Length: 254
Image 1 (spheres, rainbow, N blue to C red):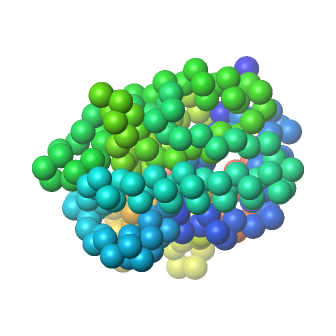
Image 2 (image 1 turned 135 degrees about the vertical axis):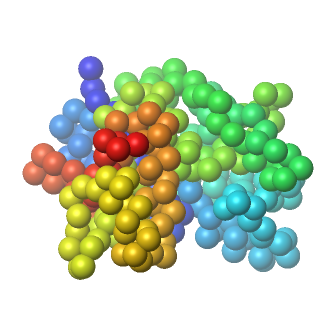
């Protein structure tokens, strides 16, 4: 049975993915791995909303999503970001297919309509369609949207969606693909870190800025039941000479 790797690509890295990243995906596939990609699209969505004169509002770190915002989210995620990633993969000779999260994969309930609007809390994943695509040798590229209990579409956090996908598919690795090599300390890349070490580096400012939500997303994924979570760069190979790059975040003290 082939092992599965789930890659979560943030919206800010999708335009910057470089040749080494795609080469490592090909190497992983040749090494017998299935690959699934979950992607964000925050910057594209925010720009689109601004162009349309629609206010962007975040509540507890989640994008408040009314009907107009959900429409914009679907247009940008499905119509732009997803197609862009699939086209990039295909241009590198990698077989990929775009897939929308609500299409027989992500399932969710409303989190709190009054507070967040049409934002979902993940309730499960339906893996049959994705598994069939993986068996065909394709890389499904999936939007972070889910089907609600009444068939409606809900906006969901891409990090959490990726964690649920990894659990549902019993993935060997969940990798958060970013624009940095991993977690750095004193200019050096750390091979692995624990929650205790992350908490200390957050407190003393070693981890700052855009790395903060990345490590928090990784820790949340570990709490969800993933055995191995990693933060790596899309600007370089994520797999080389039989091993993964980046920083492994371990669950030993969770």
